[in-house]
Image (cartoon, rainbow, N blue to C red; front, side, top):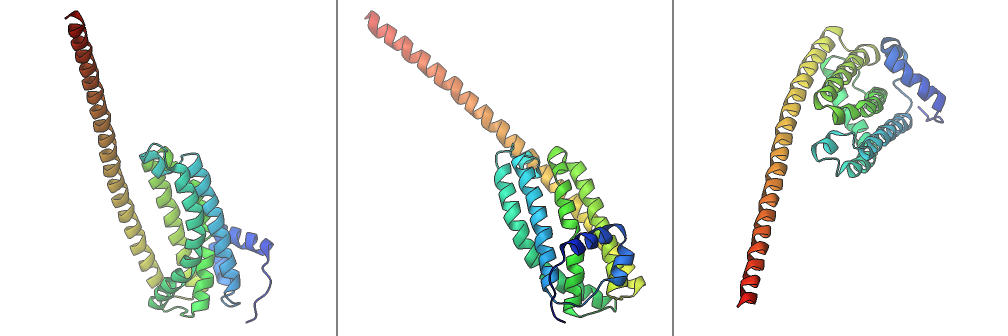
Length: 237
């Protein structure tokens, strides 16, 4: 089907519909129309997400800045902006392949174009996730819980996309959604545990370094004192 001009107002309306009425949106969304529209959507979502990442990085409201005292927060933000845009483009097509496989398992649509278009619609959560990511810089566990909530809502959207847009079997889609939800929960717990351990090691390293520097400072003071005493003794002679 021929490509048409990108309608930004429709993009806004579609984004709202995906978030607030996913069943209705995916039941009526077009699964044909070319790759330009989903590509533009992915770039817009990726750019918005990257801007939020940049802002939180500059303000040191990221998990990385929390772990390293905010020293690299700005650098992380710039990397997030560039990486988010590139990642959105790559993720659109990789996501389309993954969704196609999941759709095939559910007995749904296996047309690559259709799955890419659905993937682009699901990427609406990317800016929201980036917007809320500052909570990880405030408290790691709070950020983790919010991230989990966003991920679970994403799976809820995925379920409706599989059943209503790609016409997959409802029962199979439910099973896959539940399995993915369990995996997301386990991965989050594992990530938070590893991050906490790494943060503890980092804090211990910093404390040991400060202790070592303090000891060296005391040693230098003792050495200078000893040299002054030697000079005095030589002067007396």
